[in-house]
Each structure stands twice: as C-alpha cells, then as structure tokens.
Length: 197
Image (tube, rainbow, N blue to C red; front, top):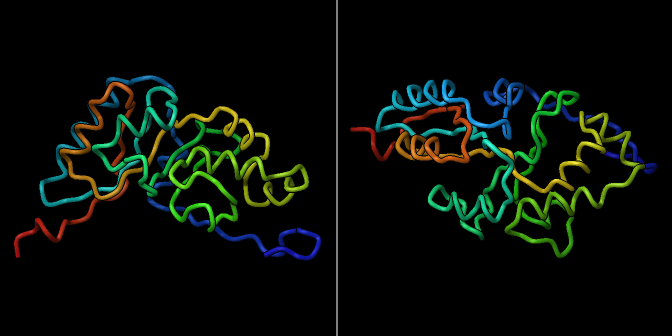
C-alpha cells in the first residue's frame, strides 16, 4: 500500500519457493554446457510417463520474443497465449536473481493502457517506461533496481522462461533445441489422466 506521498506503507513478503534456488544460479544467456545438459537429460528421463512438470528453461543466448514464440509454439507459446513467464535479463548479482515478467493477467491488471496483450516483452517495456526516478525508493524496498529494470527493458530479449504441465518427452525435446542451455525440473506431479485408477 502507498500513502498520499506515494511511499510504500507496507512491503509485501516474498517467501522462498521451489524455484528460488534455481534463480540464484540462473545462467540464461551464457552458452551451452554439455555436462549440465547430460545431467538434465538423466533427470528428465527419470520422470516417468504419468508425471507432469513445471520447469525453468535457460536459453543459451538472449532471444527476441517473436523468434522465441515461433520456436516454442509446440510447447504452448503461440502468439496469442497469455501464459508466458519470461526472464528478461541474465542473473543480476545485486538482486540475486534475473528480472522476471509474466504476461498473464494482461494490460488492465497492471494499469497499462493500450499495451500489447500478447507480448510479455512489450508489456514489460511499457511498465518500465511508466516508472519515474521518484519510484526508485519504493522499488528498492521491493528488492528492485530501477537502472536494472531500464537496462532489461532496453535490451528487450528473453533469457529464459518457465513452462508448466510438461511431459518428460516435451522437456527432452526442449532440452535438445540449440537455443536451450538447460532445463531444470522445479516441480513434478502425477497426471490424473495418466495414472491408473
């Protein structure tokens, strides 16, 4: 919440999640590491057919959203899909994580007028463009750095993303793409449609 001067009166708490440890070591944009890919292949191979997973995908190089959407369409990234969860920067040491943005919820939920509903990158750039130097203090209280956000918006590339409800077969297919550095299984749950009753 903000007071009449625009200062935060309370700062929300963001507890660690299953994803946190992967964010601390995020290496999107740092090329391919064959040993890591082999380890990921073994882990994914052990998932079993009746399991669906949430995974963090690191890209080997920064990729523009239109190129990424085209390449990843088989994995649920069609141009109009809103559930894009993108990392808009490499790991930022001062924040101990990369910059993250989701298109889910759309423009209205974020108070963005006339923004591109289907582009997570353009939504992020518009949101960062709406920030002023006066927001610096409040952003710092939330663990964000205005310069880092502006740099990421100016870069306009995706360094990684999160996928949900993927089969092991889907994840292995993703891992084998040349632009993918690594795939980390964050959570795996039984698929009720595939578990024998």
